[in-house]
Amino acid sequence: MWLEHSSISPATRRNRRYVVAELEKTNEQSIEAIFESIKSDKVTVYSIVQRYLDYMRKSHAPFTTYVHRWIIIAMFQSTLGEENARKRTFDRLCPGGAVYVSQSKMCPSKEQLVTMLKLSNPLYKAVLAVLSISGMRIGETLSRKWTDLEIRDEGFARVNLRANETKARYRRHTFLTKEAVEMLKILPASHSGYIFEGYTEGHLGYVPAEANIKEL
Image (tube, rainbow, N blue to C red; front, side, top):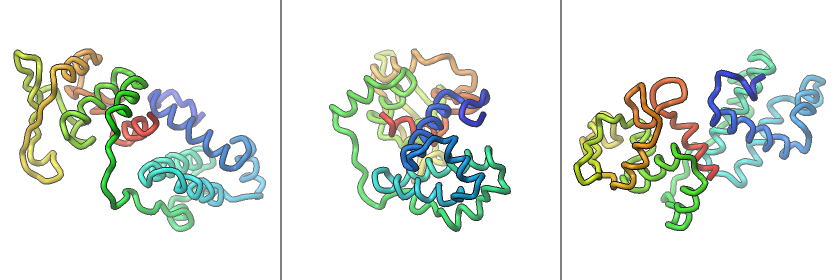
């Protein structure tokens, strides 16, 4: 089953369950009833998705709506078949819209960050610590390898970023406190060399990390 497929990570499974629960709330019926309505031609899959997107845009950030749109389209393509849930038709009838808002980003307050840290598991606690201290973008944070860190005798670390890894395309460095370094050290051993190792290969993905942080 798409919702509980053995190949997906626990974080992806949680995100899928959340989207399904929100879809049920939006349509005021169970997911089984939604599929039955689609199969009996009472509604179209595209109208279901558009109603959900309209709901999301009223209370969620554009990027969150973008992620949910991607998840829900993948669900219908997987369960109904791509011939019954065509991406080109989704793009025409259920456009994604802007991914980002063109305004200054608001950072969580100290109190909000403390709350987020308390709600997080060790992995996301470390991600939040690095993001809040280093000034790195989330993509820069997730793609760091242990070889990028110069851990000093005092316990803090210098983080090196190469020019081709930064948005501005210039080499720079930042620092992590001793406390942040200790959070990194308790993470499971990495076989790929990445500090934040992915569930399958490479480093932890941007989309699942962003979605999980926004849920906190």
